[in-house]
Structures are given as C-alpha cells and as structure tokens.
Image 1: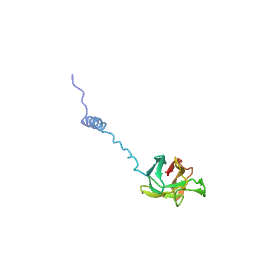
Image 2: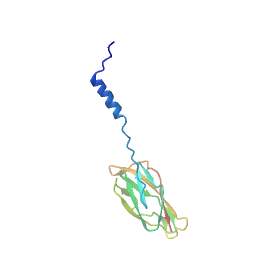
Image 3: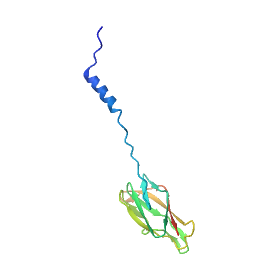
Image 4: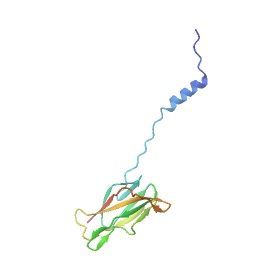
Amino acid sequence: MKAPLISTSLLSVLCISIVGCHKEAKVTTTPPPLPNQIRITACVAVPDTLAVKDNQPVSFLADVDYQVTFLPKITPNGPAVPVSPNPFVVRGSIAVPKTIHGPSNCGEPGCLYKYSLAHMKNGLPQLPPCADPGIRILP
C-alpha cells in the first residue's frame, strides 16, 4: 500500500500558516496623564475632573484637533470662565498650556468649571459636542 503524496507547496503553506498564528499580540496602552495635564483621546478627557490650585497652569493634549469651551459660572462679578481666550483650540499632539484662574470667593471644596469638547473639521467645531468634563479650582 502506497502512502498518499502531499505536495511540497501544500506542506509549505500549512507550515507557514501554523507558525504565523503563534505571534504575540502587541498591546499598546496610553500612559496616564502627567500632573496638571488633561489628555483628550477619542473625545474623552482624562481625568474627567481635574483639581488645581488657583493660577496654576494646566496642559491640554489631544489626539486630534478639538475646541475647548468653558461654560460661564455665575460669580459675584458676573459670569466668568477660568481661561482666556474662551473657547480655544487644542491641536492634535501639541500640548496647550493654560493658566486657570477662578474668582476670589472660591472656598472649599473649590469652584467647578465645566467645559465641552468639540471635534474640529475644516477649522469649525462639529456638533454635537463630546463629554462635559470639568476643572475644580481649589483655594
């Protein structure tokens, strides 16, 4: 009785496909943000709420271009936002430092300023805006 012949090309394909399936999957993780840094990826800000001392710089770093708009908060001197100008644009992969300043009556637990994120396309913010994270200014 003769043993069945397997072509060498079929045998080669089987060997290559078996060896190729045992490659390790490369897992990439995003490192945590630096202190006083807000990292925006896929329209999500990390951390969601950042606590900083008054007049401290905060660095915004994003995967693509976003417009950041702080929502005005009622203060004794009228509506106010903690940055100037408001809104401002964060370009993809370029850190944008902003000094955060709150009203003088920011007591414990601090003043929370919410902001919205909007993807930029052709120089214009896209609707609807993304998540509504915030910055808490501590006295």
